[in-house]
Length: 517
Image (tube, rainbow, N blue to C red; front, side, top):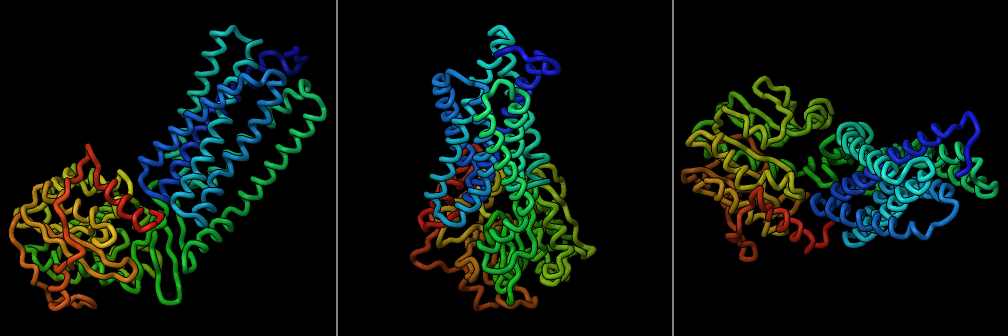
């Protein structure tokens, strides 16, 4: 590389190139995290999504590194072009995945997702060899390699710290993708400006035009991102989206139609106001009817306040502790007028204590015993959720119950996910409960939905209190514990932390029905 004249000294050139390695490493890891996270939100099973993304990304980097040997001349010019192209593909990756998810099935989505990963990986694999060769005029080989690799790794470290603690909770996947596309293009633009003397005029004009076009495209996309996201949300949901928030834990969507409001977490419906009472009455009143005492009750999940609404119908209740991972759910359920009306402002009742915490960690650290524990946690669609249906988790639940205590959990749909349902029942037994009572109720928004009642003593499944209910009565109760011939709860291996087999059952069950879960 010819020597630059002042003020672009050798030191400045080295600084720009070393800084470019750091930024390139930062951007590439952010893209990988973005694609993995977005795919996990849409399809569940984050272990599979992250494993496939990492595997294909690393292999594609190897391909890019291998073919970098074919680039013999104008290395700096090629590096700048790669940064602009990588910025375009990486920055547009999440918006593209959003569009693809809305218009394809599971298999097609996986194909396009992995194609994006491969493209990003190949371009990333070209970066480091090119920068190493560009820097050969500045450093001996051993120093050159150590500088390049160390700065790339430090950039990757910063990405892994920024993504979960700042980028995802503050910006979400969509805006973060666009922002880092701009960073990548800006990196190319900076090198283009600084080393402009080394690039011939026609190529320089082409690179300036390309970087300007991509920059303006991303600025426009970022400016209209809320409109784009709103349009995308409304294309996925049958009713208008009235609340949308990406938290560090999940994507929360609340929709409102002429007759109902619906809550979705990571795209999966949690309830519809038209029929949620069927679900919540079945989950709450059956275990409470069998409780010897019901003064002190623990609810795991249920941050929207509908479980506690039903619990508070029992006058004997003195205290309810709700443990929900996401504080945003408590805020939404306490402030949104529609939700407050639906849950009857139950979260503001003086008997209710709100605890924003992971259910597993809470049970590990708790010392208090409860008369009844009710689990209203999301389906086991990821390994982090599957652990909340494990033998170890149910052991913790049992340890927090009084000797005569009662436990009940939602347990997915016994018709569509029968193997997962059976596995949860086996896991509760493996957790030390001597008596389990599977039952199910038809909830139109979900279909046939399953629950499991458990205790360390025999329970009377025909018992029901006299609370005001829209769905349950003695005749309905008897039918809930009856399973048709094609829905028989089998004795399957239990789910454990070491081997989360429930996740395999759940994903396979849903794939049989062609669902994007």
